[in-house]
Image (cartoon, rainbow, N blue to C red; front, side):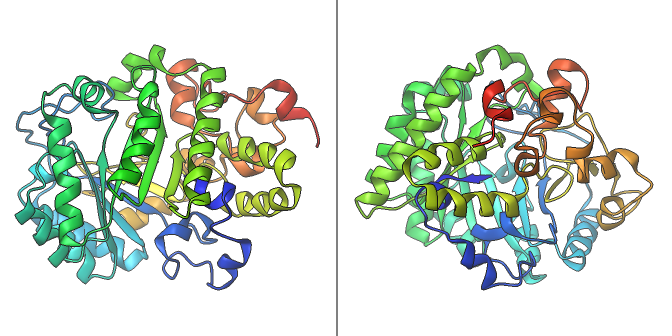
Amino acid sequence: MIGISKLYCATVEPSDTLRYSRQSGQLPSHLLQFSIDKKPVVVWNMTQRCNLKCVHCYARSEDISYDNELTHEQALAMIDDLADFGVPVLLFSGGEPLVHPRLTDYARYAVEKGMRAVISTNGTLITREKAKVLKEIGLSYVGISLDGLEQTHDRFRGVSGSYKKAMAAIENCQAAGIKVGLRFTINKRNVQDIPGIFDLLEQKNIPRACFYHLVYSGRGSEIAKEDLSHEETRKVLDLIMDRTRDLHDRNLPKEILTVDNHADGPYIYQRLLDENPERAAEVLELLEMNEGNNSGRGIGCISWDGEVYPDQFWREKSLGNIKDQPFSKIWTDESNEFLMKMKQKKYHVKGRCARCRWLDICAGNFRARAESVANDPWDSDPACYLTDEEITKEN
């Protein structure tokens, strides 16, 4: 994640990390990206089932029953292991996690074991009553996917009325006192709605929004051609920075992040070099602490069937299965050559990435996209929009 509000608008300073040990178990959630020990945030895709038909779904979910999900006993053992390992956050995802009958039981158990529990949801199943339960069990955050305004969102999600239900979910979470934010996947179908999303943040007093770059995985690989061009991506980053700054300057700050394209870090830094060189130096320090893409290091994924992946998008690269050995053992297995390379991926990337001056703060960007396009996980990320001059020129 790249914190636009934190980096561009100076809502987090380098000294913030010094107030903490930089150990992930002691850092607040908004500073986890700067942890030094990189205990992973774990995404648990607890079910493949979903009640929507999203065109970009990395899990290829359908509204059908699946028979390969972890048993109750296996799920509890997994949570025990994650807590003992020091995982700071367990993110419940899917499919749609709220279709799982034991979501609240597992989230409560994770909180009782000392982890922060958050969910990533389409929001359509969060009634007022469900929101109250989620608050009571100690849920830290609800991220609701909203991929455009009403017409765009319903078309993108494949079910009419999903926008209205998502908006109701936001209101229900707010009424229950749960922090809620938006998740928006950028592509050619919805890029025109980004200004409207910022308007919505202000109108509905929503404190957080994550803008995801498209990852070519699952059904997302089928719409890769609808990813933005490099020039379009640069314009979107400028728009997001401009709108974030506008809110900040009007004393209406929001937590705005971009996700899954670490070229955003150098892009912000280069813009600040022109606007505020002193602040640019501080941003560079924060980016160096962040260390770029965290797949296989600061983030991991456990699937509904127990398979472990470097992140939730890269489902072709299993690292093992928790039915055979605990996540903590899989994650630290030095005999797993691919995993060890992922933890030091900047030493193994090829092409433009290998000669890029920003490699230390990007770590080669998103390997799943490289494999999807070039059939080589170590090739250049095709979504990197920095020019050849920008990756070689010393400022």
